[in-house]
Length: 622
Image 1 (cartoon, helix red, strand yellow):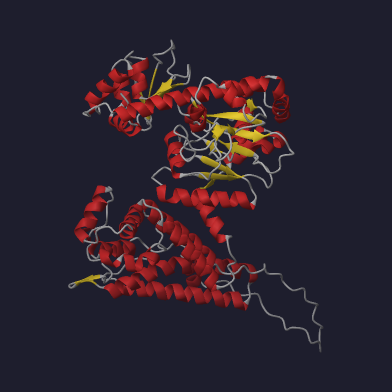
Image 2 (cartoon, helix red, strand yellow):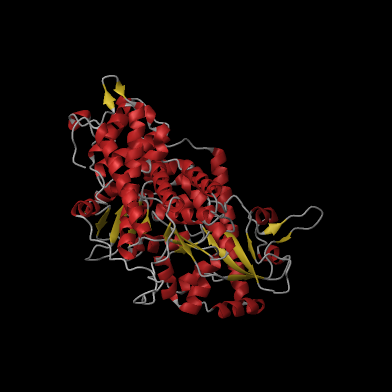
């Protein structure tokens, strides 16, 4: 009987792995996982971990690893189908009826696996034979130890168009063609795909050879690709396969990181340097399927790209592809390597510790997105800056998860505001050196006394700069928006610019923006239900008493008053920051210009606070 991978994945998702293992082994909760003494070897200190979220167990002592089906076959001793039937009964699933076509495909795949295993043996034998001298010399030049050569299964494809056919004569030529080992060209005899190349096997999650990658050895063949991979076959889908994932998975789960490099030779170089968690895509940009597979191993894979323009474009492609898929806790981190260097260069020239240092400096996805778009075009004119903002918001719109979309909008809008509306830096004040004025009859500048100390009232007002406003106005604004959620979308951009240190108010504001951005229900009752489901203690009319700031009257929410309140809540902190900077400049320079600027901003702040106070129905302390 042949069961589809989709059905087996559904079975695994419905079963609690820790519950199944816990029936025969004593398990203990350890954070998000469970631990136990390994049942596959004798030990006194637990090194056996169970992860229900990812659906696997792993022993760091003996290397035992598998899912719930593997547990039933390896530990309970059941045949595969008996294990599946028992688990299906527990999960309430019906085992599919036998499908003759699926069975035929499974048998065909099994036969192709035999072909690929035979091809791998042929390549390994050729590497150690007389014709493999150039390949062995190349491996020696890369500094790969013999243990790495054996572990990764290096081989050699002889420079013979019919060598594979002769070596694998036990298999029909049609199977060799179907496995991607031979090429058919109309009007010509079939010939071997890989010739005079250093060969690396590509393995699936169970460690079976499903494809090959070959590196050219002859420098004279300038018209041939440097690297050549197997084509897509019934066994191999390059868009879904991650090179070395079967080998890198266990150490990656142990260390909590997985490193994605551009090619399989980089993977081998890092493994030789002691970094065993490296994987690579196979000749394509990282795909959605590959990102999902990486997330099953660790929640934030680290991607390494070259520092040249091609590497930067590759990094941006990965960012754009990942944005729609982002989930809470799941993202990407990105490392940019020094210009003109790949991981092997870094390790050889600077040592493994330099590579570790680069990995430790990986940037977040939002940082890479911001920097790439910020540097993509000049920002000399208002139109240039508006173009940057449009590109950033367009990226945000591709994010499917509503909360992450709202948070990205808020973060990128904040960064854009800091860039677009930043005051130009002034050079530090340099007091002019003046010549001493003549005692009489001279034309020098008249003597001026030092500026008087700040008056007590001004001093007190300046000490209050930066204290911001109380949470009450924002609380009142949120109440109004909860009562009239249809107004959120019209003011979303301005609302995203409001910042508060009050965690509850910030969570409420982010949730309202996320609901509106996701096209959620815009009925007040539904909004309150969603906030309650998210365990957000939203402000209510009852908690405000009479402090409503004129936003809610007898006839409901006043839309004009609400718009004015939003403007004030955005502008007051901005004026606070500008006033603090003006005060610092005044203290440093003591010129009439800095004094005038400080006083202008101070009066502006007082006017804004007065307007906010006038909106209230009670006297507030701001």
